[in-house]
Structures are given as C-alpha cells and as structure tokens.
Image (cartoon, rainbow, N blue to C red):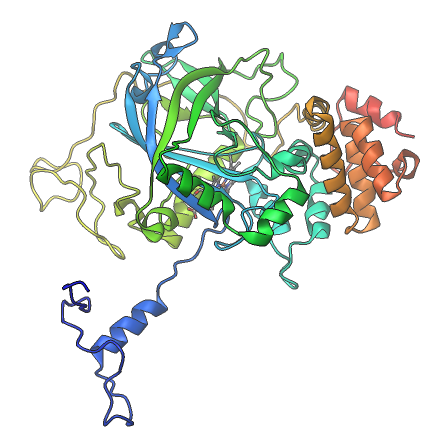
Amino acid sequence: MTDKFLTNRQGHPVFDNQNQRTVGARGPATLENYQFLEKISHFDRERIPERVVHARGVTAYGYFEAYGMLGDEPISRYTRAKLFQDRGKRTDLAIRFSTVIGGRDSAETARDPRGFAVKFYTEDGNWDLVGNNLGVFFIRDAIKFPDVIHALKPDPVTFRQEPNRIFDFMSQTPESMHMLVNLFSPRGIPADYRHMQGFGVNTYKWVNARGETHLVKYHWMPKQGVKSMTQEEASKVQALDLGHATRDLHEAIDRGDYPEWELLVQIMTDDEHAELDFDPLDDTKVWPENEFPPMPVGKMVLNRNVANNFAENEQISFGTGVLVDGLDFSDDKMLVGRTFSYSDTQRYRVGPNYLQLPVNQAKHADVRTNQRDGLMTYHVDGEGENPHVNYEPSITGGLREAEYPTHDEQGPVLTGRLTRKRIPRTNDYLQAGQRYLLMQEWERDDLVTNLVANLKQCDRPIQERMVWHFLMVEDDLGLRVGQGLGITPADVAHLEPLPKQELNEEETKRLSQLG
Ligand code: HEM
C-alpha cells in the first residue's frame, strides 16, 4: 500500500473517507462537514457541457515534419509560414478525431462524418486545421449550420435520429447531394481513425513574403491506407464495442505502431476562376486533381496518448480562426461563420480562460496580453516590464504592438454591394455524379442499399424529391434508389425545381429528359 495519504483540496488529511460526520453513529449529519461537502459538491460539477457537435472523440499527440518544397519549388514562393520552410523541421501537434452527431459516449460505428482536427504548436503561436474525412460538406453558408445539425440530431420529441427529418432537410438542400453520396457510401463509416483521410474542406489562403496570396486546400493521406465498413460490418463491431476507434488508436500508439499521414495541398491563384464550373470558395466542391494536383508538403506522426482524457480531450479547443503568419482565411462563407462559432462555443463550454489550459496554450510561442481575470483564470499571461500597466499604449513599461513581418496589405482588391445572395456556379449535381461513377461496384451497391434503407422510413413526398435529385445527379443512381422505393422517373417528372433553385443549362437539359 502507498504511504501517500488522502487529503481534501485544502491539504487537510482525510482520516475517514467512508463515514460522514454525524451526531452519534445513527444520528443526523452536521452541516459543517467540510470534507463531505467539498467531495460531493465537486462531484456535482464534474461535467462541463459536451461539444454541441463532435462530442465523442479522442486526442493524441505527435509531430509534423516539413518537406520544405512544393513540387520542385521552395515552398517559400507560396507561403512564409515557418513550420513549412525547412526540410526535416518538426513541429509538435495534438490531434482530435471525432464523430459529429452522437453524444460523448455514443457509438463510434455511426454513419457520420469524422472530425479531423489538428493543433500545431508553432513558434509563431498555434495553428488549428479543423477538417473532416469526406472532403466536402452538406451546406455552403454558415447561416444554415444550426438547421443541418438540428435535422441530423435526435428529434426534439422522440429523441431518436429520424431519417424523415434528415431527408426532409436534405431534399430541400440540393447542395448536400455531393456530401450524401459520400456519407451513405462505405466512406461514411471509416474502419477506425487510423485508416481514414482528412481534409481541410474549406478553402484557405497562403501568403508569401511579398504579400502575394494563393487559394489552398489541405488533404491528409494515411500511410496505413484507407479502410471503411459496410453497415453490416459496423453493426457487428458495435455489438461488442462502442469505442472501437478510440481503442484502436490508443492501442496502436501504446505498442509503438505510430500512425502517419502525409499532408498534401492543392493550390490555385487567388481569384474567382471564371473558367471553372464551380466556385473555389464552395465547400460542397472538390478541386479536380488533374487540374490542381495535390502536392506533398510534410508528414504527421502520432506517438503519444493523452494522460488525462478530461484535461486533454474534453477541454482541447480547436478553431478555424487560429492561423499563423503566412496562412490566412479565404472569403468562403462557411469558413467565416465557423471562425466565429468555435471560440464562441469554447468560451461557453470550457470558460473564458480556455486558452490558459495547458493543452490549448501556445506552448512554443510567448503569450503576452492585457487580458485579465474572469472565471477560472489561472495566471497573468506574459506581461510588460511594469505589472501595473495592463493597457496599451503606455510609455511606462507596458506591452507594445509587434511589427508587421513584411507588409500591412495583401491579396486582391474586393468591391461589391451589401447583399444576401448565394454564390453563382452552384452546380449541385455534377461532382456528386462524378463521385458516384468513380466508386467501385460494391461501393455503389452499398450506397444504394443504405439510401434505400433510410429513405424507406421517409414520407412519400420526401422520397420522391430525393429520387428526383438522384436522377439529376446520375441516371443510374436515381433509377436504382427509385427502384428500391417503387418510384419511377415518370412518378417524379412533374416535380418543378425547388422554389429558389436555379438550374444551369446542363441541369435544365437533364430535367427535361426526366419524363
Ligand atoms: C466542432 C461549429 C462546420 C469540423 C465544432 C463545434 C462547433 C462547430 C460549435 C464544437 C467546438 C467545441 O465545442 O470545441 C461549426 C459551424 C460550422 C461547422 C458553425 C459551419 C458553419 C464544420 C466543417 C467541418 C467541421 C465544414 C469540417 C471541415 C469540426 C470538427 C470539430 C468541430 C473536426 C471538432 C473539433 C474537436 O475535435 O474539438 N464545429 N462547424 N465543422 N467541427 Fe465544426
């Protein structure tokens, strides 16, 4: 037995941890029983709100190693971000994999996108790359996020995830088709976290020393290969283990079988690219790899598990606003909304001083702010020479502004009038159809089986609208899903485009052929 004895949080020894203080062995308890009250009231406060999305997840640590080049050019031509510059340069990182919809104890076999969030602890401060495993998303404007999540989350009355609610929303949201074709294919249930890809999904910018900007998309490719599960395989795993993917990652790292991913980027000049049939700022689209080949820029190795799940997995906080010099946002309307949402929810979920927690601190950069106090503040961030000065400007020893690294303006000049409009070139069906045709036969079969199984639980008008969309995506997909539901193209030929839907020439042609 250890010689370390139990205390309370005031450092008082605990002589009896089994019995409350009472008047006599059978008598009433006393209210001044500090030891009991501290123990029970702390327990009452053990949980913080779980993440509103991505509640179930696992965190691990490792490093990123840069290649220093982009193709055969030095990477500095495109970005001055220090972590990418020198071949072999290593940057510490934390990663959190997650599912999206279920609560923090839910099954990891769910058909659900997987979160793939990486926090790089660079010398210029932290960089978070918060992505998923499917490369695209359901919607392209952040204002729709609460709606898509409400549709996917349990019904507010029955508290069951209901296909009818999900497809009610999706059937009115044509931009979701590309994501749905991915999500209901085997890729919608990765075998585990080590065998899946990751994508930044949103479009970001790179900035070089001259202030020139490029648009960029990020891809993580697992050296372990990509493996997925069919619904049937997933059911068998789920019957035995709700947390198989967390266990798999923990065990691999514990036995020294360190998982690795290569980071690749696609890059294009920073403009609208009128020559493309989609907008490069649209996160429901991928960039064709033949025109924009993914180029490797480094690799990630995971080699350490967390020591405390709550401190390091529950409280770790990622956000798309967390960028370092040489990296920037694009005007992608999802990205802008996300950037507000993450730190907002973390100030509520973890607390206003969440950035003082060790896992969230910029541990390889100095932090010096004039932010003070607030709930659970842990220390004063680094300060100037005079501790009385917690404001700026000051001539009495406070902190001063940093110098701009190279320039104080960058990127193209933008003009426009205030409006609320969807971006042009929505082209909601083409890439969904291309994805379908690229699948192997068994993947197409699985996709159709999964869609039919879910749509069978939906009302007829929702089924018809979904078959209509799938016929617009690709004849074969629409015909097969329709067949599974007993719906023919003639049954849906009367449907008009959705009220605010604008079809392009090709889509109008497809529509005219439906009957
Ligand atoms: C987590 C909002 C779109 C990936 C979260 C959280 C919120 C949120 C509030 C919880 C964060 C926390 O409690 O710490 C949004 C909004 C979106 C959006 C408003 C759209 C406008 C996306 C997209 C992706 C994504 C497109 C993938 C590219 C993630 C990931 C996490 C997350 C990976 C979990 C981070 C972690 O492991 O802690 N999101 N999200 N989100 N989101 Fe999003």
